Image 1 (cartoon, rainbow, N blue to C red):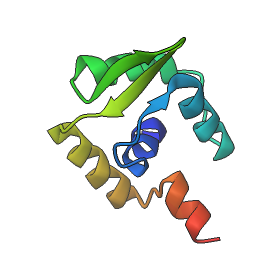
Image 2: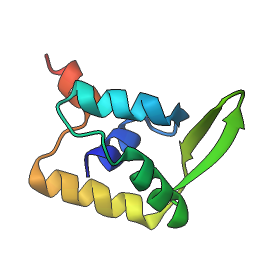
Image 3: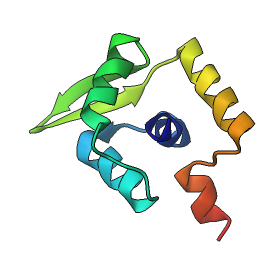
Image 4: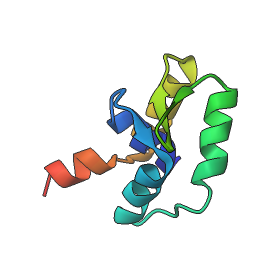
Length: 88
């Protein structure tokens, strides 16, 4: 769930794996499963990826699954990293 919220907060901006890991760690979430979660999000057509030099970048795709993650996060009162940093 933390990775999904982090991706949603980026609003379509491309990112790479270590950037996602650092973003989660910065906000106290475990980053150990990021690679596996990114692969799953790709398998479910929630993300697409493209190489740029030595890095593989990911970009959020339109998917009904993102709405489900937004609803769950809202119901649980989970705020993403950008919301937390803006409120401090």
